[in-house]
Image 1 (cartoon, rainbow, N blue to C red):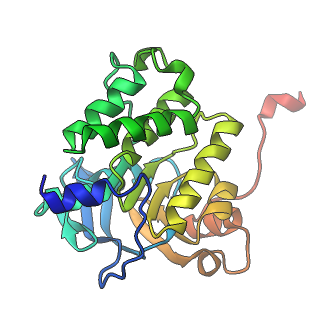
Image 2: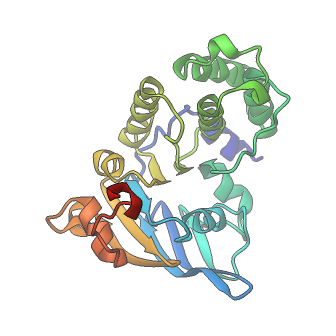
Length: 271
């Protein structure tokens, strides 16, 4: 890692930058992915403004995880490009991935390391100074209420604890853009409040967040921009108010994806 990128990664756990940029924080230009006959993501074009808290919503199977995986360089797209503050994720990998902090949906963590060992490994792998890594590791474990589990290996963490240590991994190098796939899933209410505080602080200091969720009230409470994905395509995007158009996000979502909003129960319940 170059001296310039290492220094920027060490500036703070959060984004900590208000410098103007001529490019969006994150930009998808025609991202497309097919698996056999299935087109999972179809020509997605999105521009995520710098400093925004951007929600990506869609029904199960809409292509959200595939889209985010392509956007951060985990899955190679069949067509299209993804850029982070102007750097192509595939052509300028070091520059782009230095800017990114990623919490994917899948269980990807090394399972035989403790939380402290994992954060130390990731920080040093990114070329950070050992003293900075140690300080940030202690702070992250404390804030995320994982200090008591520091001697516990990740395989013995609960699902919520693994979600929190994965967020710590995404944050430790001080990225400018966070990409989070269902960050609140299986997290207890107190931990969820802590995570919300961290993410709001990240955005307030100039960082950008793109996150996916199925929970519409959560998206409404956190996000200022949103995109609705259905069958691999963006059917609506804009500010939260633009997409809602005077409705709740739940109702707007159902209308946009053409869902039947009638509620049914099982036929034998009445017998």
